[in-house]
Length: 120
Image (cartoon, rainbow, N blue to C red; front, side):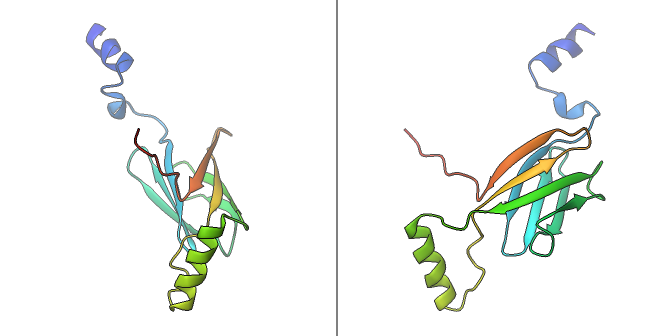
């Protein structure tokens, strides 16, 4: 029992403990929201058809809301227009905030695409 508690305290075996999966990442493509859960489950929804909705068949069920940021920085605007002009319309995923609501009412907020971490 002592080893088990120590293992939990150090988070070395949390994945082996049964429980509700937790949202780990949310990413958007031109039309699809992809939600990744802590147990490896991947769920998808067409966020263009329904920017607010539920993924009832995803684990215990998760609500989602996508808020597109319409006026990103000028470099992103140029890049998006360039790829569209070259015939790759939709190749650049929209810049958005994705809110995932768990079955207990807990909320997680994700940025899509996720922010880039710069090294020191």
